[in-house]
Image (cartoon, rainbow, N blue to C red; front, side, top):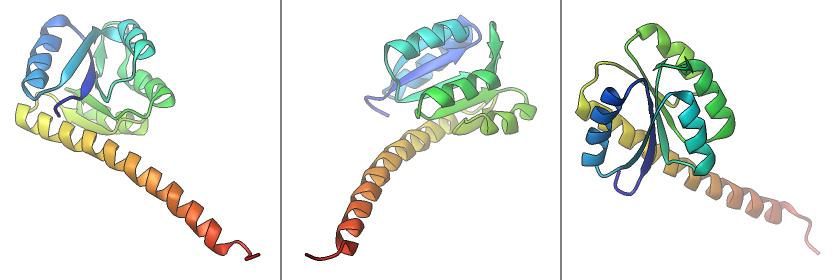
Length: 144
């Protein structure tokens, strides 16, 4: 995950600091905010490579914010919650992945790696698909 920038949106400074240390040891640059207001400000300044969103926020609903995020960004979103009941609503709201707390740090990092590499693959496949479609159109065009 070297060189990747993540936006960590959490419920309090203590939990954010613990998660930030785990992510930084994995080579990530981490921007941290408590709550939704700070998250919206961070997103308006620059786009992260990925987002980690906690369900328990002091100023709003994590699932609703996930839905709002998905309408504004294609960045992958890992949704974390201590309540298994949040899994389906989070995924339906547009989360890329869901992780139940408490989680194993190694599993957390492994899932983030997959999530971020999948984003890169999607970009490459999207460009390849556009080129393939353009080539197919040229091949099927009437010859002059």
